[in-house]
Every structure is written in C-alpha cells, then in structure tokens.
Length: 347
Image (cartoon, rainbow, N blue to C red; front, side):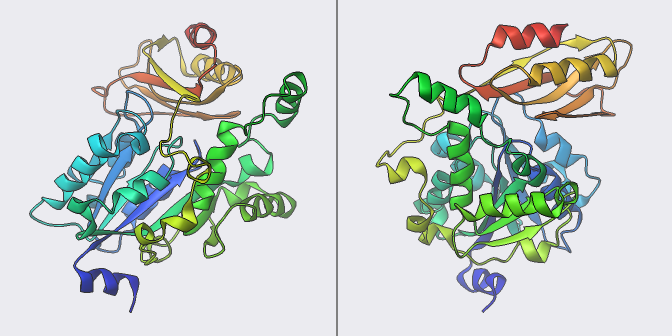
C-alpha cells in the first residue's frame, strides 16, 4: 500500500519535517512545494530561531491558495525542539481542530533545531492517533558543503585544540549538521547548479558519512522538486527513533541544549540598498556569525528591504507591504561579539 493509502487507511494525516542548516534552501523548497501542491490542502508550521518571524511571511507571499496566511502557523519563540510542549503541540492540536483537516502537514524547523525531539513528539497521546511522520527531509547547501563552510574553520579548531588539550568535544555546528543527516529519510542537495562534479563528489562524501542507509538523496536547483518526491515517503519515523539518534542521545543526554547558539534582533535603518548589503557582508565576517535575515527600512523608501545572508552570500529584495514588522535577526555562536556586529550593521 502506498504511503498516502496507509495514512488514509489509518485515518492519520501525514506530516513532513523539513530540516537543514541555516540558509540551506528549506524555505525555497517549501515555497515551490506549496505552489505545486497538485490539489493537496497543505498546512504549514514554520519555526524561527529568534524573536522575529520571517520565513512565514516569505511563504505567504507565494501567490498561491496553498500559501494563504490562514494555512501557515508561525512559531517564533525559539527553537522548536526545545519548546515542543509549549509551542509545537498546541500548534498541531489547533490544526487538527480545524473543521476541514489538511491533506498533509509540513513543518519547517529552525536551522539550529534538532529534528529528533520533534519526531518523538508525534508519539504524544493527543497526536499519535491522528498524525504520522511521513518523512524527515534534510536540505543540504551543495555550494557551502563543497567549500567546507558548514563546519567551523577546521584550521582554527585545530589551533584551539593545540592550545587546549582538554578541548575534546566536536564543534556544535558540525554536530548539528551530522544530527540532521542522521534523522533524514530524504536528503535534498540544494543549489546543485552551483557546484561542479568535483565539488558534488565532496558533497556526496560528506553526506554519506552520516546519513542513514535507508535515506535517499536527490539534487535540486532553485528548490524545484516534485511533490511526489517530497511527500508520500511513508517512513512512520515516530516508530523508528532508535536509528535516528542525535549526538546528545548517543551520549546518554536526555535534553538538548542551545547554549552553543544565540540570536538577537536589531531594528535599524540604512541610507540605501548597496550600503546595507555592504554592512551585512561585513557583519557576516565577524567571528561566530552564522546567518543574518529580516526586514530593514531604507531612507526615503516605504517598502522594507528583505535580507537573507549566509556565508559570503547576501541577497536582498523589496517587500511591497509597508506595514511589515521590521527587524534584522542575527544568529550565531554564543560567544560572538554582539557589540561588534551591531557596530558594523549600524555603520
């Protein structure tokens, strides 16, 4: 029986968890999925790491009935894997209480979130008989991984270890990348058009080290991937948590902490687009900064400028809705120098 047929037979709604490192292309992938849902009624839960939601508004602008705001639940109170009981479960129960149940639920989790605690949440009494985890989709940025930019600077890490022999733990970013692969049923290599075959070989090797043997791998560019590939995996992942353990679980730790990461929101104004892009690019070079995204006001312009920055890439575009809440979210390692980032962005 197909995955969709199984869900219908059991009366449970299939849910897909989309995970992946910061800037991997999760939102682009989901936006394409919603625009090409082929008649499926999809409910979406978007989780942000930080106090200002952003991805939900990007998705709701996709000009498709499937992207309607009422179909999107945005959680912006921190990492979803740490707030399962307070945020995710009430959001899920609210979706299930709707008079017209969705055909599928898609959950985009923060780039800093572990998927494992969320998979386990589907075994909670109020959810387990009504929803099943159809699959965990991990999105990988091909260009970043090919250049070794997902992990921290290996040379700097080696230097730190040389100075401090007691430093035995793995880098938190590298652990997160590995844990997201370990939980995947499908690994989506995004931005494949930006990588040559030699680079893709490095990407495939990095993925193979940690992905589950059962997980499939597909390549995509610009988030274009058929819904038949993303949905209907039939993994029932909540019944298979033993093969998806994170570093914390393998080390016998019950709780997942986010002390290694931090985020803060800045409300600022820039004189023009080019100046802002230059400042964001400089801020991304500050040690410990992982990602910058949000909406910024420009002098003399009513429409806010949307910003997405990961590594050396800075993308901006104007958002037509002048009423949107402004705020630039900076995400990075806990030790990053906030005052240095603020000074750079403020010019």
